[in-house]
Image (cartoon, rainbow, N blue to C red; front, side):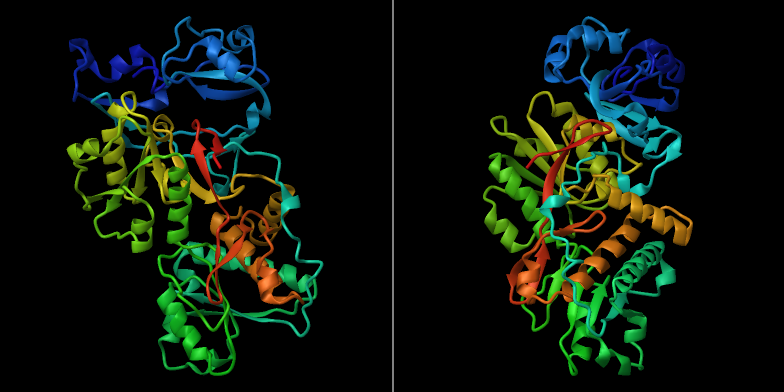
Amino acid sequence: MSKIYEISIAELERQNPELANGLYAGQVLTIDTSYSHSKEKPDGNYTKYFVQQGETKASIAKKFDITVAQLVQANPSIADKLLAFEYVYVPTDGAPMSNNPVVTTKVNDTKVDNTVVKETTTATPQVVADKEEKTTWEVNTKIEVDDNRNKYADLKASAEFGNGLNLTFLYPEDISSKKEYEDFDRGAQLAIDSINSLGGGVQSENVNLTYVAGTNLSRLKDITNIITLCNVKATESVVDKSKSKSKVNTAFAITTDGQVKKSDNLTLFSKSTDFYKQKALLDYINQQNGNIIIISDADKKLSNDIKNSYVGLKVIKVAKNEVLDNDELYSALSDVKTNFVILNTTDVNTILSVTNSLLPKYKSYAIHLASFNSYKNIVTSKISVKRYVILNFIFPEYEGYNVKSTYMNQFVAKYNAFYNEQPSEEAISGFDITFDFLLRLSQKENMDAVLEKSTKQVVMPFEYSETSSNVFVNRAFKIYQLTDQETVKQLN
């Protein structure tokens, strides 16, 4: 416990006087990790590495291509025998110490080897460099410097704007009702300003479903291009009302369960759909010949296409406010294959229940905790990141989502100058989706040729493929693994 929670034994006993009588299975401890005593940080560049079961100083040195003497020099207090999940500093030519994220966790329960531990700390996950708070979209991952822009097409030089474009943003409700709507709109307006500076002549307006449901529908017939934050059904209703005059090009700016089977209009799922995000993860697991166990909210359904495409799927339903049935989970584990336990949920209690069940088994079985959801939606301040590290957490995310670039720096500076705050992830999505959509609509080539081109604006890559007539989905997903509290690596 001392090693895992980075707290001295003396402090552990001070917080839990009952430990004088010994430690027993099922005992409840309270650990305030704000008292944690970390190893002294070495000078220079380093990686914070969590020791795996059975590793030695020699094996770690070999893994990172350094000498044992270098490892010991960076960790003067290192013991001859290392303990699993203790951390060491590994000298590296990577990012300097001041650029490494600092991660702490909030209140949650952890169960390790059948002992329930209540953790409390005083801070939420954030990225810190040189004592300045970084923006939320950087997530808790190591920032790479290679942006690999040469693989993406630059559509600005080939754009022909002509007489300009009309663009409608469709929101479920008034923009002022939610911060994420306001942030998305701010990013989108910067994209329009950028297009107009290139000669775009874009005219835009915002429409919400409350307005559409009203009696004043006369303007809808003039809509030709929509970026929507509404679901498929609501968006198609608006498109149907406007089709009398012209075709409507539509870009979905949210991840949604709904699918469009075919369309007379151009339909882009700029943020993909849940189906393709699930497929990206399951395809990777199939390549590993893994045993697939899906832990799902009771009211969530997998599509028949998913269930029929992946043989041997085991689905365990967990109702809200109920605890996972350990026997059902354990009976589904394989002792000959790697077990991929996929969270089809973002419910904190369910995730705690699943990880509580898996932590005592990680030594006996090969286990990867996984999620259909992106990192930011599943690793929250309410659950310790250490759980995910121990359970080899993997997840689908847009390629290069954690890469910092000069494009990012320029956008942050511009956004800050306009709005006097750092951009959120929604603001960056607003810019990326709007800018890319308008550029694609402004090309002299036919749309089929335009949609064959892969692009990347500030953060989001766009790699569209046609799923049915006139319906295209962004499939720029890769699979990532959380390797420690600070770093992810791309697996495919």
